[in-house]
Amino acid sequence: MDGSISSTTTRSSPLRFAQKPSSPRPLLNPTPRVTHAGAGLQRATRLRAISPSPSPSPPTPQQQQPMEAFGFDALKETFSVDVAAAEARPLNVPLAAPFTIASSRLEAVSNVAVRVELSSGAVGWGEAPVLPSVTAEDQPAALAAVGRACAALVAARSAPLGAVLQDVADALPGHAFASARAGVEMAVIDAVANSIRIPLWRLFGGASNTVTTDITIPIVTPNEAAQLAAKYRGQGFQTLKLKVGKNLNSDIEVLKAIRLVHPDCSFILDANQGY
Image (tube, rainbow, N blue to C red; front, side):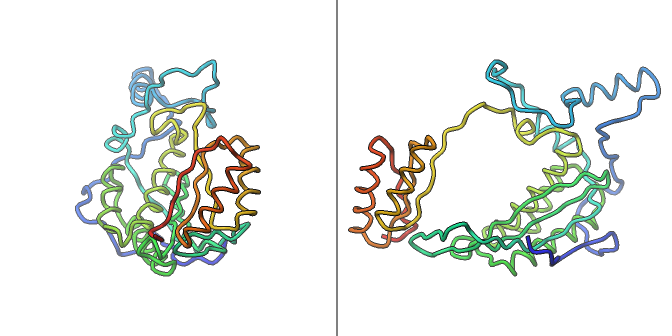
């Protein structure tokens, strides 16, 4: 990660989201002090779904059963967010191998990392993925957009999580700021989850032990595609997503080469508007 910081904000920032509550709501404390039995019962009722473990693990196969969601929608109304610091950082990472699609070739990603710290000390991270051929932003534009949102988050009074997320959406509207908005939302939600010691898999409704996914083969030669397909077959992948769209005949040769080494796989073809 590039160590330089594009935009760091402090409490002196003059920006503020519009239409925030006139008086801040208290932050939910994940480890409250109980001074008497009645207070303990009341707080236990409010936090009954919070796990006492700071690092809960997903359920084992023996424990797998329908799990009650923690209640993200309810949390949006009850959890008061007070952002103490927020910043945008350039995130430049070279790829292990070039990734070629019909519209572009990537040798590195130039994204934006987002860090949000609440007044409780909880920290959340998000990432704004930048691909100018797909998103409307390049890295400088995304850094600037995230920086503005971070300044507003810090300047704003504490407000319910749902109101904060709506303010982020209002500040970074539409397709033009889609990746920046996603990165900021990610960081805020991650910070909230960390502050109440709930992993995101539970916050959004529980977890499954397994998930079936595909894996992508970029535009390469038939021989390179066959080598990747053989490798992915050994790793258990049964569905291969192939980047195509530059030359139909070459794409057909790639499919034939893959079929020889992975005869039982399923294909997803992604031409990225190349045909």
